Amino acid sequence: MDRKKVFVTKEGLEELNKEHRQLEEKKRPQVLDRVSQARSMGDLAENSEYTAAREELSLIDGRIEELSEIIKNATLIEEKHSRSGKSTVQLGSSITVSVNGKKEHFVLVGEWEADPKNKKISHESPLGKALIGKSMGEAVEVEAPAGKLLYSIVSVH
Image 1: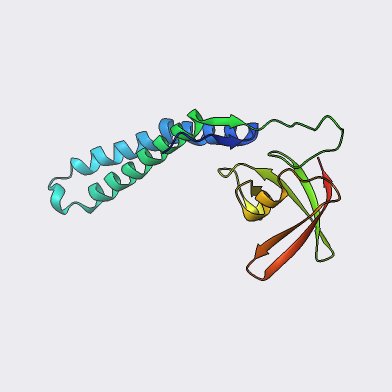
Image 2: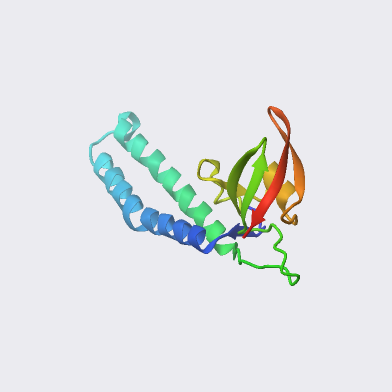
């Protein structure tokens, strides 16, 4: 993994740390125990339980390594507002937009926290890239599968 900064909110970093601890302290020891038990069953060449446990251990170790790297490179998203008193869209902003006459609410987060179902969009997404640096009252056009959509910024917090 490259050394690029990973932007996360305080809550997002807590979730990453929680998952890391869960994997290291609970899940990995359980799978190691399964590997040990399966190894004691005899011939490893034809032991599907041993093979499955080793594969799961490999996946867990990979995720632990990935999380360690993310956490090490994490940069917390701080809430900042411009000196003019006019809020601009940035990482951590809560944004209300109007699109096709319908209001939608988003929170702009780093890519590791993105969760479109829960209205958390990445600053790397087409919409996120278009909104960054914009202010209330401005509009942005974003290419979507259904064609170009015009988003008008209603509020930024």
